[in-house]
Length: 348
Ligand code: SF4
Image (cartoon, rainbow, N blue to C red; front, side):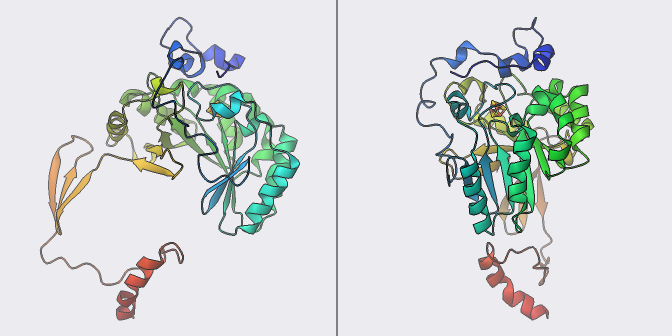
């Protein structure tokens, strides 16, 4: 069972008079965690079934990025955590030998452009150790980006005030904020400390009883915008034992996040992300806004009213015979490039 761990700061944000306080729900033990059975019982989507583990600490699932599990410690414990198994086992921090092995692996795989420091929470490590880890990867010529995933700014924003040297070496911070009440003046200040050095994104989690309505999610996006953080995704919680009470029915989750369209500007719209349980990758789930009826007729759903409109291309419409191929990736889109080649030749 995951122990309850809270910072004094986060404790002060909880409304202790409200039995349904969303911040309490995210961090305090609930009876619902006990006795959850199937489908929670089979192996959950935690490591190592998740992804493609190269070692105890390195996962290489997507060609262009790899994920490093630096520690199993966090500033506080989230009851819905999909890695709580590691945290409960008190998995050791990565050691020097594991770091050297991970760096050698990334150096030997030129397709890897980004290393993601994850955990637990990487900011639980001392700055000196973080710099050792980051600098070791920074020496790899083909590695273009160091990304750090953290919830420290939510649980202990003052930690960011100590991070200047580390932040200079980081390209992207992905924070995890799930409710607008977590965007306090201290959190905004923490983001101000990081912003000169790195891009700031939010990867929230869609949680029943915390943020599962349009008003709360809209408020969260606007609060993040005020803090200079882009709300780029919302995770649908993984099937981890003891967390079923945090999951909405999937269809309801898709409808809910879809309902944000037309209510928020595009740059504040998070995408709903689901991790396929066998480790086959993440997918974005969206209610279909477009259905093709025939070659020239489409049904389009209004994001404002939900009404469906028929869109018809002109009968004599001719698609352009030539388009810029620069977006095609030489390796990944080879088939498309080959199919398109005669078109380009005719245009020359
Ligand atoms: S901060 Fe992240 S790793 Fe730590 S308990 Fe929360 S969700 Fe899990």
